[in-house]
Picture 1 (cartoon, rainbow, N blue to C red):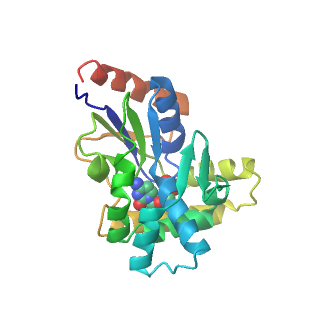
Picture 2: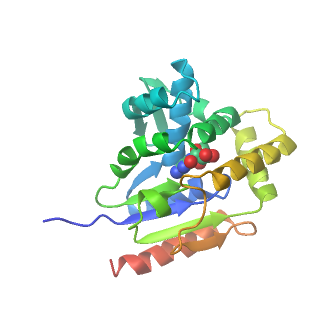
Length: 223
Ligand code: C5P
C-alpha cells in the first residue's frame, strides 16, 4: 500500500544553524537527510574540475544531471574521491551560489533532491526546500539569525576545522551571498508562507532543537 513520506524542511541563510539542527533532527527521528547545499557545492567543484565555466549553462546542466556524487553519513564522495572538506571552503560556497542562480541548473537538480524523500521520513536542509522542492512538507521551518552572529558561528566552525579565516571577511562574504540568494529570480531565499520562523540569534542549538522537535512530534501524531 502507498504510504506518504513525512518531509520536514529546514530553510534559511548560511550560519543560521540549519545544518546542525537538520542533522540532529534526522538522527533523532531515524530519518534520511538531504544537505541540498552540498549538492550545489559539489556541482561547483565538479564544474571546476571539468574546466566548465560557470556561464556555460548547457554544460553545467549536463554536469548536474550526471553528477557522480554519493552521500554517506558524514561523507560526500565525488567520482570516488572524498570531497567532504574541500566543498566546505568559502570559495566553494561562493561558487555554489553562483551556479545556484541559474534556473536550468536548479531544475536539473530537482529530481535528484526529491529522490531523498523515502520512508520512514526525510529532513531536508536548504534555501528552497519548503517553497519549491517539497511544497507538501508536513512541517516547514525557516531559521534566521543576524549576519554578525552567523559570521561568528562560521568563523568558529572553520577555525575548528583548521582553516585560517578572518571574521570581517567572513561577514562581508556572508552578506554578499545572502544578497545573491535573496534577490535571484528563481527560488530566492525566503520563508514559505506556511513556515514556522525561528530567530536563533540568542538561542542555543539545544533550545532550537527542543522547540522544533516537539512541534514536529506534535504534527507527526496527526500525519
Ligand atoms: O547551505 P550551503 O551554504 O552549503 O549552500 C551553498 C550555496 O548553495 C548557498 O549559498 C546557495 O546559493 C546555494 N543553495 C541553494 N539552494 C539550496 C541550497 C543551497 O541555492 N537549496
